[in-house]
Length: 171
Image (cartoon, rainbow, N blue to C red; front, side, top):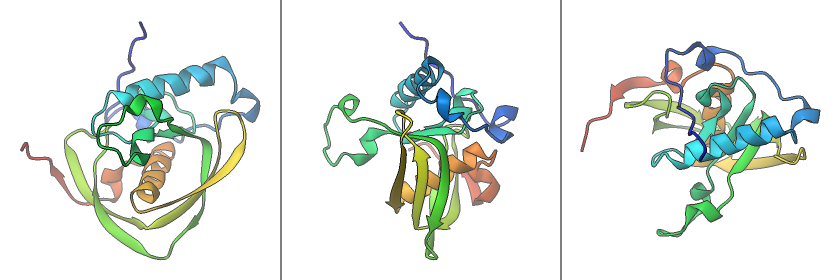
């Protein structure tokens, strides 16, 4: 049985550091494969989580994953069959001039929400888990996820950018 990684919370210095690039020759290493597995397993336990960055499980490397469940239109699909998207050493190469402000939360700032203005479209260049370079564009929620996760890699939390940070009221 694998021990699930704890999600690091605001206040831990690892969330405020600039994550290190993964050397391209290490992308297919057992260490990175284990990191991706740990990240996927941890994210899978989070009902509200759709993405996670490596610093959120205490590893200061430039890696984030987006849950495959984000791409499902089915209500009762088995999420475990949808692969997570892996981004290693991601860089934003293009953003739209259009922006919108939406409420964001974060697995590392539990219970807090705030409105963050971000470009509505983003293109990211990164390596996948096989060490291949790819580009992926995203609009709407996916664009915001790309920006939110890359902020994590740069030591920035959404509460640093948000207006009107507030506690989430229990329903």
